[in-house]
Every structure is written in C-alpha cells, then in structure tokens.
Image (cartoon, rainbow, N blue to C red; front, side):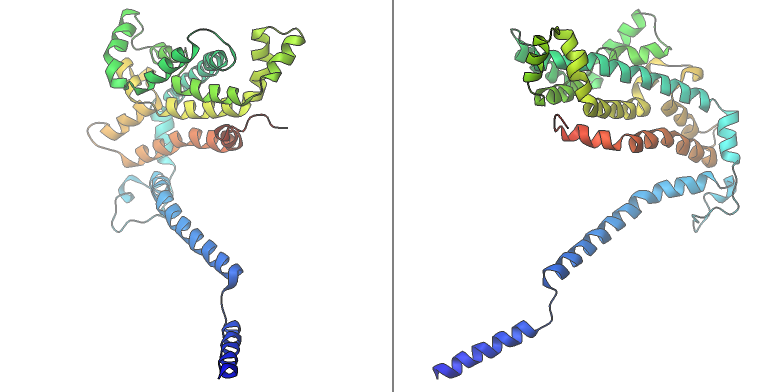
Length: 301
C-alpha cells in the first residue's frame, strides 16, 4: 500500500512537471506586454487632443467642426499660421513672454541660490526659524495678497509695463529656495573647509566651489520657472491693459473670446500650437538635467 502511494505521488509529480507553463520568463514578458498596452492606451488619450489641435490648425475654417470629425486635413492649408503671424500681434506677445521668462529665471537662479546657500552652509542665530518662516509663505494663496501687490505696483507707477510682472520675482521664490537649499545640503562640508584652507572667502566658496556643482538643480529651477512664467495668466491680466504688452497667454484669450464676436477656430488652434512649441523644446532639451536635479543625488564624478 505504501509503495502504491509513493508511485502515485511520483507519477503526479512527473505529470505536473510535464505540463506546459509560462515559467518566470513567460510571466515577465506577459506582465511587460500588459504594462505597455496600458501605457499605450494612456498615451493615445493624452496625445489625441494635441493631434486634433495640429489637425485643426491645418484645416480651412469650414472643415474644422464637421461631423463626423476627421483628423487628416483635406485640404491642407497654412493660412491659419499666416494669419496668426502676420495679421495679429502674436510675434510681439511671444517676445514679451520670452523677455519675462529670461528675467524671472535669471532672478530666481541668482537670488534663490544665494539665499539657499546662506540657509544651507552658514551658521547664524535664528537660521532655522527664519527658514521655516520663508517656507510658511508658500501656504499663503496668491489671492490673499493680490490686491496689496496691485496697490504697490500702482503706487510705483509700473502698471501696464512688463516690469510690473517681473518685479515680484526678482528676490527669489520659497519653493525654489527650498529645492536649491536641499541640494546644497547634500554636498559635503569638507569642500568648504578645503576651500577656506586654500584662501577662499565665503562668497568665493559659493561662486567657485559649490555653484558649479548645483547645475542639475539650477536647470530644474530654470525649466520649472520657464513653464510657470510662460503659462502665467492671472498676473499679466491684472497688471497689463494694452495689447502691445500682452503675453502669449493673454493673447490666446483674445482668440478664445473671438475677433468681432465670432471664434475663429483655425487661428485659435494655430496660435495654440505655436505657443506650445517653446515649452516642448525646453523640456526635451533639458530632460537629463531635469531628472538629475529632481533626483538630488549630490556630487557626481
């Protein structure tokens, strides 16, 4: 009886081993296939509005809202882009937005890195308390100080100027100060000591030793600030009232409201596609630095 039971178990084991199965490699491949399928579906739904925007920008006005909708333009036309670039102030709006972005990025990189260096590497009474106060300002919504800031700008006589838009950002942002400070904290203090032995003062340590090591986080701040300044709508709307000083976001609102009371979808889609190009170029060009800055891994060989 014992021998018969042992034989049955041996036969069952052989049968089980002989059954076809996926195995670990097959299961891994199946899991990867399912993951890629889900990502492909998500990518399709994400890109579909962008593809429709490009398609509509290349269609005549009467072909955009036809039913059933067609993604492929028939016929193709560049008239919408010609109208946006030649018949509107869109090029001027792009220059205004780029100027604002350059000024605010430079200000954040200079003032933000200086303040972050002080909080990360210097020792002075009340440093931690002061840093917490700086961070606490991030909890105050813009709507809470929107009117006081407007009154200050009005008192300075800067309304309807690009300086009114960039002036509040010339002295750093709490969020960017926090990011840069955290990156400074990952750098070893031995660098400061070695630089002091070589005769460097505090500012030289910041400028020559530590600042070159923070390129990834500075690139991250530059990309984030570019996106924020390029897409900013509420503040330019508050301070600017002439079309010549409008930014891209304000100019797009004119297309949405319609020229002469009617929305022209072709120029609207063309201007929207053109306004999306600079952020896409910046993100693709700085994606490696952006990933490195977010990782905050400190010194790299």
